[in-house]
Length: 309
Image (tube, rainbow, N blue to C red; front, side, top):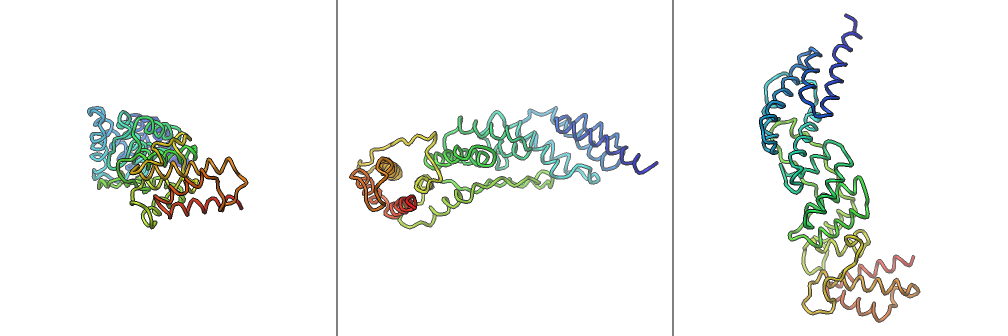
């Protein structure tokens, strides 16, 4: 038999198998791999058949889906035709589907959007990100939604999601992407790297941890520093003043933001003033900012000076 005939004899059914897998049809993919008639193809055909059979008998809970894949891929059969990253992509498709009804649920440290990202459908990842923001309170899930919006979509919207997440979260947040918990099955640990947030946004989180003169180290101050530096913006573009800036004992984050916004509105109305000259309204706002954090006031004044050059 010629080399071309040998190539076509295995290549055509393998191509058909990959097409079936792209549609999620494990049964058809298994049948096509058997036609390739090579030990590696038979090994993967057997794995696909066992996974498909196990999935038919489960309730499609993420743990059950994981068990179906792990059982087949831990078997001592010869190395197969499919690469580890291809197995992970198939696994991620099924896990993301199992998590679809609970977009906020974590499995192995990842959300459904992370598993969806591993399968490469950009529009579906963005849809999940929007859904997380629409259905979950500001917090960690919004950071992850913004991670994908920065990568695939609207940067301004992603900036507002980060701002709202930091301002509204009940717990401190981090810019680091979540790490997939290892399972001990190499093919199920062959995940792609999640996209990082833009370096300038990550730097905001790091800065708040070391910047002197902050009332505390809460990541709520990330929203403040980000708004001063014009790297983050209020969610929906609406600069609401959620507390009375003059009220004693008010929430310091909101006191500072209210004063910052008042100062900027005053300066925008009077663009002819230099950085050291300001209206009475801006002067009062600067005093409120200083009462909260002189360091952050200096940062604001630096942005005023930069805007004039």
